[in-house]
Length: 262
Ligand SMILES: C[S@@+](CC[C@H](N)C(=O)[O-])C[C@H]1O[C@@H](n2cnc3c(N)ncnc32)[C@H](O)[C@@H]1O
Image (cartoon, rainbow, N blue to C red):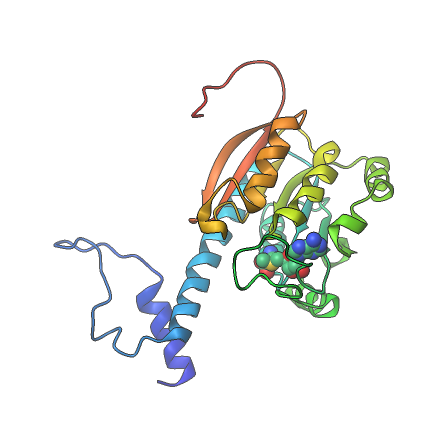
């Protein structure tokens, strides 16, 4: 199959779930359609399905922000190929959020030393996109380009008191923060840094809630979030599920007790 045909084949038959009026009630690819199915198909299939779910999340999240009049900036911790960053730019533009600034926090040299990481893809230097490549991609995207700010470096170094003071001086809070940095060690300084920049109604999107560590919420980025949640002055209401891997939370404050399973 030619490359283009392969892409069309995956596009048409694989990513959309379609109902059927008889058993098994949903259209499923059969053996002959999957006869040539290989690793490339698998990767494209998973990427398309995942990115579509993320794009839907961003559409919903920005609609939430607009409807609830939550003003503030977009922070992304873990930018890599700018997929989610571009989703944020597009949805911000759709909601005419012309005041929002877009902060891209990344080492731009890939993952740091990975202490307890369990996924073979998470080695030092993995998921590398250079700063130039990232800037090229978001420039080419062509939305709110003049309001994109890059913060380059490992979080443990750059998310320091000086940088936080600069943000506090500007006085603009976070409306939506995406935490997509895979590792516990990476996420700990992010939550620490962001706490004073949050506001009621801010969304935290945690991409790797169930990714790696056999999905255990007691490890990785989810562990960092749960620890942060227990000591933070903010409360976080569970909001949207994003695919099998991610979750968003809404920041709130005040008295009152929510049921445990809220
Ligand atoms: C899964 S990728 C992000 C994917 C991205 N959101 C996208 O949609 O294309 C993880 C990114 O986190 C960055 N990263 C992870 N730990 C980091 C750390 N401690 N300091 C700086 N960047 C880090 C990596 O460099 C990588 O670009």
